[in-house]
Structure formats: structure tokens, C-alpha cells
Image (cartoon, rainbow, N blue to C red):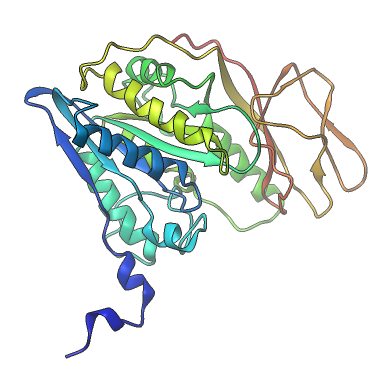
Length: 324
């Protein structure tokens, strides 16, 4: 008989997801909290483990409903210290009867968890500098791209988490990225590539947001994540804490992107997500030297100094008229 500790395939040790559930004694909503969907984003696991310790020590009381914590949603990528295991887990997330890679297998388990909950808090961080922000979803609609019926509840949830900026418009803009790549003759992407944890949660009838806590290496990102967990539990009435007030100060809608068309296209300036720009201000520069300017007053979203052909150099947003 082989020694189970001598298995040659390291993926054999990455097959189980740890989940910790605390269930209140009164009925209420069920919250799912995820960390390390991207393995190099470690503030989520640390914030979640701190919240688990709070529950076990009685510092955080779960009185109604339930909360399920998954500190590490992508064990392989987390073990490697990389963003991905075989591919990006937060893309093309849906049930895969015939899983083709590690993230497909993990995704099948995550999809089952998502279906069993009412709300999702997915905790992330980012490479660049900048303030924390929350990605949330569309307004109520019956369209084909992302039909939704819980915009008011999701918006209120996003606004309570403690981040100063809220951003929406992800899937609409992903469709623009697909069109831009087609124009460049690059391999075709499917709209489902833009579907991650929150999109699947909305598909299941719930709602969910992505919290970007700050820079990967910033210790303050752990505090942002932990505070958001406490706020989420209080807002939903799962814990006995007083509900938090709305804390976001600006809401941004993504309306466009600047795509890298060829080597040498680059970001112009040292932008951070949420930075304001004036109409006509250069935000990127083509390899030819031509400037790409802001079409109107707005904001820079997800600037990248390492974009390759077909990637977004940055996304462009404007002040949203959404009321939360």
C-alpha cells in the first residue's frame, strides 16, 4: 500500500476547501464570505480567520441566519503564492459537469456553496496603490447579459462595508473588451469569461459584491476586510451589532476602456483606481506617440503598467446616477 504522505502530485493536497459555518438560533439570511479566490491576495484569508476566531471566542455573536467562511477559495494558487492555479478562478465560473482543470473542480464546489446562500462578500486586494473600493452589480433588469432583481438590497450592502468608492458596470465593459479584441483579430472571448463569483451569485437569485481592500502588501488591507465582515453581518442582522451607516462617498460607473493595441502602448502617468481626470487629459499613449485622452470628466479604474496586446491599459468611469 502506498504511503498517502508520499503522493507525487502536489495537486492532491489542494483538493479540499475549508469552510467554517456559524448558525444562529433564529431564522435569517445566509452570508458567504470568500477569501483568496486569487491566491496571492492574502488579506482575505487573514481577515476571515480573524473573524472566525472572533466567533469562537464570543467576541462576535451570530444570533440569526448563518455565515459561512471560506478563508482560501483557491488552495492551489494560495499554496503557490500566485494569482492563479491553472487559470483565473474568477472567470467563466459556472458548473462544469466535465471539469478540465483545477479551477473547474474548485469552481464546482464554490458554485454549490453560492447556491446555498443569500448574499456574498468576496474579499480581494490589488497590485497598485489606492483606496479600497467595492464592485457591485447592475440595476434591476430583465436583459440577456445579467438579469437582476435585487439591486436595492445589493446596493445597500455595498454601501455599508466601509469602502469610500463603489463601482459598477463590469459586465457591460467586459463586452466592450470582447469587441475590441475582435477588432484586433485576437482570440475570441465569450461573455461568460466575465462571470465570476458575484455574477454567479446573482444568477442564483442572491446578490454579492467584490471588496478590493487595497494593495496586496498593505497590512491595513486586513483591517479593511475584517471591518467589512463585521459591517456585513451587522447590516444583515446576523450578528447582534448595530447596523453600520452608509459610508461610501462616491459611486462610479465604468463606461469605456483603453485597450493595448500593440507593444509600446502604455499608461500615461501614475494613476490609481478612483483618481479623477479632466476632459481632454492624457491617460494613455500609443506606441506611435499619440495621446489617448479622457473623453469627459471622469475616473481611472484598474490602471495597468504591464498591459499586453489585448489587455486593458485602464478603464474609464464617470460619476454614477445610481442612488443606494
